[in-house]
Amino acid sequence: MEQPAIAAPYPARVTLHFHNGGEVPLWLYHRARSQTGEGSTLEVRLEPLSVPAGVGIDAPGRGSVFESVGLPRPRLVRLDAGEDATEKNTINLLPAQAGPKEKGTPLWGRYRLSVVSRAQYSNATEMERILGIKLWQGEVASNSVEIELQPPVGAGSITGTAARADGRGILDALVSLSDEQERLVSQTVTDPLGKVRCEIVWTNGAVIENVKGETADDGLISLELIPGPNFLTLRQRGCPTQDQRLVVPQEGGIDGFSLQLECEKK
Image 1 (cartoon, rainbow, N blue to C red):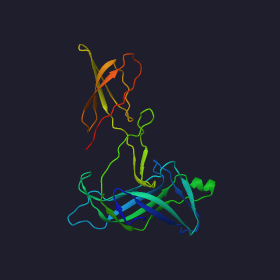
Image 2 (cartoon, rainbow, N blue to C red):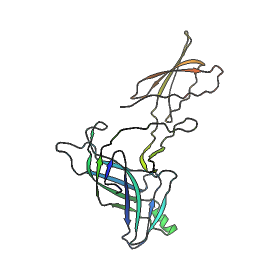
Image 3 (spheres, rainbow, N blue to C red):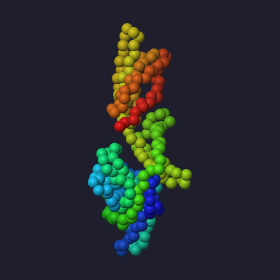
Image 4 (cartoon, helix red, strand yellow):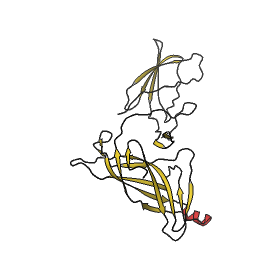
């Protein structure tokens, strides 16, 4: 462990030491980001050392390993018999919680931290036959270390939208926050946008035209509207209804509007 005490929301920086106790060389695969569930993974285990009397744990302590920033850097590391290898990781830690989800009280204090390394490959036998290398597969747990999780000394937030040059949202994008030394502090993945129902009304006082639709996962919607003032109502589950006014150009053709739904879901 780089630091014995960690104040939220800062992560833990750890160095893992691997030892090949076998008689043949093994290859460790340091993966790039993967959605397949196959390859090498690290599971973080975080257990409180003491819980106040009468306090029940509604959510256990948990941790997640930050992904590498920038271009993927998968690599194979040869580990000869009796040799050691090291791997540095940045781990986000969340304390156990007493009380219901999102409303409970974090349990700060001393914890026992360990990780479990797993590896599984469907093509391992083929790799060994073609390349003559043996990929390590299996599961091994690290020893435990004690750390102290401390509450944050301040609070803040960063919000924004990941979008392409044409304004379309980027789904499942890895967003990383680094400090002045370019070390990871926080990380998240953009979620698909919740669908928004749109109802647009055009009227000249005698005739009323009503158009309805729903946005796609990327937040886009395509509708045919009558030129002139149109009155738009936006509805999204868990958010207050919002009304906006659009003026569609008289010359016709294709036009685009960028609309923002202000919503803080509970």
